[in-house]
Image 1 (cartoon, rainbow over the protein chains, first blue to last red):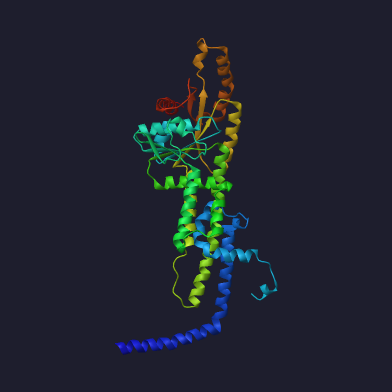
Image 2: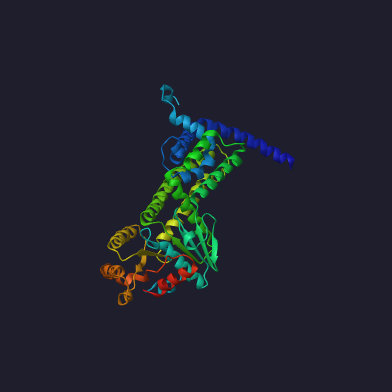
Length: 93
Length: 325
């Protein structure tokens, strides 16, 4: 029994390594792009729901407050992104 | 049909509302309708969404912000204290943030946002709106009698719910799209499915609540909306305008109640000329009301010799409100 398990694990390991390799070759960029899009959407979402932190009231404040507890950690980065000055490094991001 | 017949013919009607200009008797009729239904053995809640509510005055008890208070057998009255509700809500938001992130105190910029949000003009309306949803959601009563705010506010309240609904829909769409991306990323990285998106859940709940609140206003079977007016040229014109607007918002108008009618019979008695003139000056508007609203008038209530406060007076109004027509 133990031997069988070990073998399985080993096979999984080899297979897993192969999978990681393929991922690195093909999907890494796509995943990075998806992550970036997801990140932008996150900021858009916070803008729509918490906009009045920047003086842009969009969603009624009562509902903003209901959503606030979930987005507390994202708020600092969001504000930085929204308020920062644009410079040439933006094209590299 | 009079009010009694309307209620008997519509057994599903459990939300009764009186609307109209300020000072025409909405609170009086809300109390009287509550009284009548409670006397019939139903459990009734009369509640006010008006920040300057007067249920306390009519029932001669201080009920403001005290939740549902039993004012007689089967009859409860409630005045929503919006300020108190906003403060409780803010505390709840703070508590959730502290708990969620194991913090000792709320970060400064978040705290300033929470305090600032409370003073936004839309906050009070939203808080009241939400309180009403809570009351209706709990479903503890057979009948709910809404003592509505004056017309302009009621319309604002209605349009607000449709705008909120659209907003929440958009935001929910965005959130759902975000969740799809999250899933793609996770699948590509061969990770297991994440837990359900809590924000999406929250948004869906908000939407459900808004929909419930606005669907009550437009439900022909469950809701009876009655306009209150008095025999005066001005109120007739206002009522006509308001009726048009309410129809535009899809609110079915159940009928009209004419208030403050001075009994004709007084003309035969020896009353001062002043009163006789008042009676005569009501004649024309009354005829106009008959012509315009005719069969849709569900009750005609007389002007009483004193103000309507206390259960005894409410009982007298209730008698006319439900027997007349």
